Amino acid sequence: MRTIVPPDGSFETDPARILRAVRLKARLGLEIEEETRAAMRRHIEAGRIVDLNHGRLQMELGTMFAYGSAEATYKALEEFDLIAALLPHHARLLQPREAGFQSRPMAVLRLMDDCVKSMRQPLASITYNGALFTMLVLAELDSGAGGRLASIDVVDECFERMTAPKQVPKQLLARRALEQTSYLLREQLLLKERGGSGIGERRPGRRAGRGKAKDRPTATSLLEDIIARAFVP
Image 1 (cartoon, helix red, strand yellow):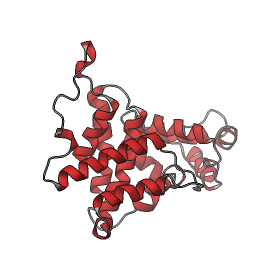
Image 2: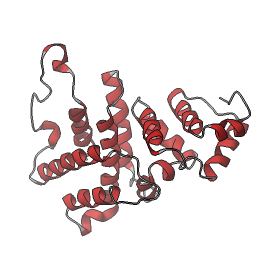
Image 3: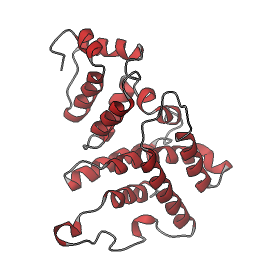
Image 4: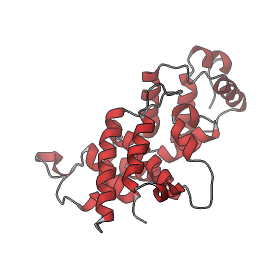
């Protein structure tokens, strides 16, 4: 894969093309031509991605994580050192540590891809935003934060950190999705502490509806399932 015109000029015109190249690499398994790859790195190092409009970055984040290649996308973003620009809190928490540290957080990406495969449609905003936030909470819990705080307090601490004003770079996950996911994570942790199996089993038939949609999960119920499965040992 390469740009039609010289890559430096292409990325100067629209830095979002760098993110599209990463998305196509992840989704289609394409390799990026060396000159194009080198130009991408130059523009990333120059901070061109964080200069993009916040709404544009949120849109690009959705196209990368909602269509069934979340795990491959995350790895491609890591390859180009783009996690810090798009998901700064993930960059801080999800660094290589002792063996197995990232197993639960990174498994969330596979669960997102499984949902897309089974549903045959992209994830809604609340689902992929909430799943990405769930990764952070799991990382905090697995890193030992649960030893110094009650597990529910970890959820609140992550939420407050994500929604703090004047963040640089400003985090891209939607606040409404963070609020709803925080609620679901608290429920999950409370049910687990009481010996239950988690929110995935708490309301049989919660997907019931009318007509043709009766068997189709809602965006929120998909997020519930991702959270419940992510907490399975």
